[in-house]
Amino acid sequence: MNSQRIHEFFLGQNTDAFLRRIAINFAILGFLLHLLFCVLYDLSFIESSDLDSFIDSYLDALYTPFSIILAYEVYELIRAIPESFSNSIGKQFEVVTLLVVRDIFKNLADIGDADNVSIDADVAFIAMEAVAFVILFGTALYFRHQTSVAKKPTQQDESVRAFVQQKKHLACGLAVVYIFVALYSFTTWLTGVVDGDTGLSRTVFFSDFFTWLIVSDIVILLASYRHITDFPQLARNTGFILSTVIIRVGIGIPGYTGAALFILSAALAACVLRLSLHDNPTDESE
Image (cartoon, rainbow, N blue to C red):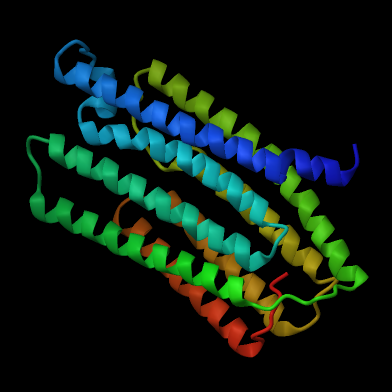
């Protein structure tokens, strides 16, 4: 099997369409099943203190479909890597946007179920997360718009084609890593549930995956030195990696600090993209 067939198998259009259908169907099914468990818990047909954090609020049912959609969006992020660095960073912010939305739903569910709630503190934190969501969403849209209007060169020299091929190989490798990290994270989480640890955290899967994503970004940066010699593009790619590192740190830190780091990452990436496009508006963003 040659490299092109391997890429089509893992990241091709047919695979993408198949996984999209699977993700949508599982998201709908997961939402309905989770909602059913919430109804049974509300009617006292299910009594388990270990599962309270999963089914004690109807808003908890939103966690399941968003988790499935997030898993698919991470796959889309991997598919964007061979296209351009800017495209993959834009998809990265789409993933983090959905991750913050999922956290907001979970926090709202916890507030609605709590007997003693510090309204000022809890609402203030959700407001902070909402601000982070808006900024992340705006950044994702900004990346999508700017990368869609950026002019692509009609011809590519041999070195650029080789660089794109290297990124395809890297994306395929990251897809394999994605599968193993997902299986490991799900197994670890399931083992924790069996042992009575039913906490829901965004660090599950995303902390490990973004670590590997940073590794892949650094490999791309180092490989780009063979094909890109001007300082602005190298500085741009370095800035994008820095924004990814900030996101990775923010994922592992709960509370206001994590939300603030997400906002910082979005602001940094948007500024870097704007400066790079101002320097070279026809940047192909390889």
